Length: 200
Image (tube, rainbow, N blue to C red; front, side, top):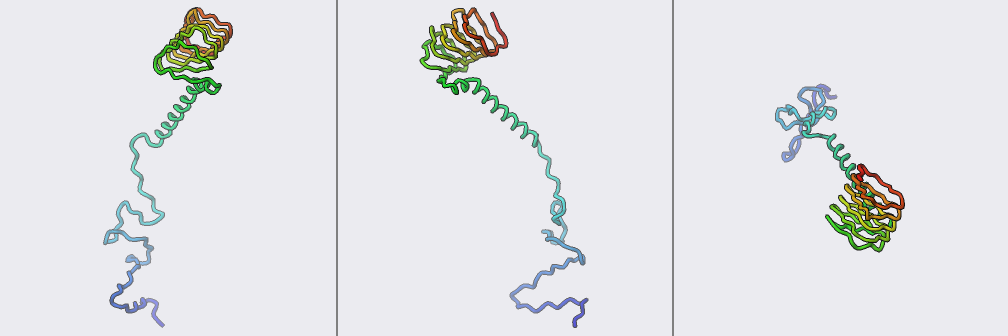
């Protein structure tokens, strides 16, 4: 029978096979986990020695952090909603009703009558000089000057809208404007829409 206090002798190995590593802890009966790159066994300050050890604190982010991402997402969502609203209350509303959309560019003068319901839009000024319009029309621009007879409903949307005394509307007129100048129009239908400032 062998003595339990004596370690068992290591069997002789052939000379080309290295001996197995000694995995016993030099501190005695203490659990060890992994090894360090340091030959003396010292742990570096950033190394973890045990799976339950805490990680070192992450470096603080510079800039606005997570809150900025949420704010940026909110701004993008708001811009998308605004663009969708402008499209719907702009040409999109009329396109969905079957109007033909005509992009006039920056500044334009319209003097030819449309033959089908049409939505005209421009980024600048529109001078509407059609003598007689027999189909529904919508005009969307920054500034709009209107003259002529409108036999069907008309919609005018702009920052500044000016309608002269020679503008006559047989049916409803919708005006959405920051400033609407009525120089004596004739209106047989209803005036609808929203105007922030109305001038005589």
